[in-house]
Amino acid sequence: MTTRTTTRATALAATGLLLAACGSSGSGSGQAGAPSFEGRGPITYVAGKDTTGTVQPMLDRWNKAHPKEKVTFIQLPTDADAQRQQMIQNAETKSDAYTVLSLDVVWTSEFAAHQWIDKLPEKRFPMSKMLKPVVETSRYRGGLYAVPSSSDGGMLYYRTDLLKKAGVAQPPTTWGEMTGACAKVKRLPEAKGMSCYAGQFQKYEGLTVNFAEAVHSAGGRVTDANGRPDVDTPEAKKGLDFLVDSFEDRTIPKEAITYQEEDGRQAFQSGKLLFLRNWPYMYSLAEKSGVKGKFGVAPLPGLNGPGSSSLGGHNMAVSSSARNKATALDFIEFMTSEENTATFLRDASLAPPYAALYDDKALIEQYPYLPVLKESVLRAVPRPRVVPYGDVTSAVQQETYAALTGEKSSAQALRDLQKALRKAVAR
Image (cartoon, rainbow, N blue to C red):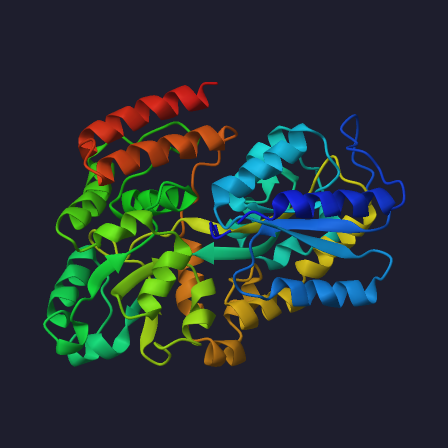
């Protein structure tokens, strides 16, 4: 999730359609049998807006080496919900404008179940070298429908300089420790006007992520292992109460109700936040900002100890209505190779899917957050892996937002969410 993932999509999609039309006649969806993955020529790569500036240089490398099979980058909005909706619209119209899709890991089951993406030949990809939780996000009913290009785990960014000056030796492992540390820091003259903590609380996929993390970090769960809703519990209420109470007592600033990833990043980098929950992509950007050398990362705190991140990241899949699928497979191999995911780690702090990269001593020396990130990924809890994910995340956002804004109590929001989730998964 990552979830970072405004709209130039219409014009770019039209460009992609023209390019696809110029290619050789590739295979269709192949849904009557196994996909054939035939056809070579221009393709498109569809993903959320690249806020790191690292994707196009990688595509330029591919295009230079494959002048007859060039890739056009179609950038969708940063809002994950808008990305998903545009990809679904393309699939439902059976348009060949989109070739390779960058899917949030929780969309894979939905897209596979609706036959919007093709089942992939697993032998083409080194899945055994990747972290097991990451690989599981790319499967549906035992088949491989996507290839992980990046993973993601939420981390706690914190101001090392201010904690040290306030006499706080270690980053917090619990919510109570975090608020206690914040109270000490805010007594410092340098912390005047600072807020304590923020995450992503606008009504979009980021809110689902932050809600799920709070619930899991308090010992609760959103659904059980079989996808059955189980959110109307005392443990889930403790998690939601942490967020609600933090807004009420201003531990979380009022304006954070509008925050997506980039809003929080900018607030942290401009000195407005002591703690921030965000994805690893932010690390390399913060290193280029005014807080360089003044921040660190730690596992997310929880109710009684370290918390649990939502498992994020992106998988690359082939649209079932695309042309030039042989090129698409080669391109996915290129983008998801260990070498190139290491490049995205170095240049954009994107969590790689390959296990070996987290244990590389040279990389750890250069990127000291890697052990924290590995722990975050391995401890992460997936968001509900259900086919009607759109209905599920919409219900979570609706009820969580109602609780955060005071429209409903935590207890009522969870009761209503339990009913909405039961209805969604029963369809």
